[in-house]
Length: 489
Image (cartoon, helix red, strand yellow):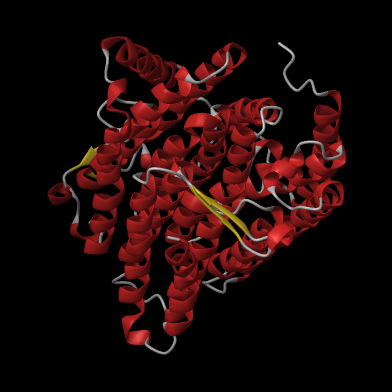
């Protein structure tokens, strides 16, 4: 199994370069690589014991592949496959598919890494591949947004690298377990890097502009899997080290509330989805034990929503409320919105139930508020006017490729199929609370938020503020680790 794992890690990078030799097969090779990852994830999920691989002794590389990894890898595989199929009939070049595979492979690498140096290398490759995809259109706007992302990411990783060196200085090992007993500044520096890469709390305010200004398939990749490369190590460390768990849970609740607080007032569809990416990552961190399942459902939902947002006639909610959308697109939009809101029969319901069952008492109120905010936000999409395509004027009928619908089958079908991971959630007691939350959220939207004209300032998203916030977050993290009292409740 060790040889298979190493070959699987190397495959996306190998195929990514082979694609240039066989450009006529770029889509087929890219899709095949994603399907191989899906098969590997399923094999790991049903394995009787986790796989631990130690290479190069204390200097790295250390790999750990278990059920938690399988959820994240499977998410990456399905999202990548859906994006490739979505782009199948477009004019995307071989370069696009190459970078998608490089991104897919480097994200996979973060989900199996168990040492800080291997993780650092994988995260840096992710930054480069993401930048090239963000700037793929070569417009001035896309290049600036890509460079902004790359600079913020690289500054954060410099802090991270210093923390990794301090861990090695303390234990002569880069293993995640080295956080125990390391100096507080080492933990703070490493966490700062991961919080920024994962789009967590105020460190994630680079995310709305980056995700919303990218092309829809790139936004789907960024929101569906890329940010989880920063979240996964936090979840892994929380499960390994009990003293790290409260810190991760604290940022989970804070992130869920911050993201949803922006989302309920947002008037732009893609920005609203981007803020909800921040919020939903908070749900992943709030209950690390079940974070893998929540990451799977969120990845599928958010990728589907960004792809759908790309075919809507407008990004402005005010315009969409007076411009009926095609009913078939609206149905796909409703299915995805229902899942992320926690509606039964979709895996988002099971994920929210499972998360709520693994919350600590002090987390419950905050996460319930975040769940209510989620229902309010996605009511904006659910209550959009719609009409059959036959009723639309010929010049306004949407031109939707078959690739879009096949991508929806993969992503939305995954939301139905993922119910098997937690079918025990379907009890009367578990069903009442999510339905009540959704109903209350819809009522609040119709009576209050639909008519709201509040527009939150965007000053905190400016480039210079993003860099300045890193220093403030570093002070906060150092204080949390130093006092050992992140949540003394």
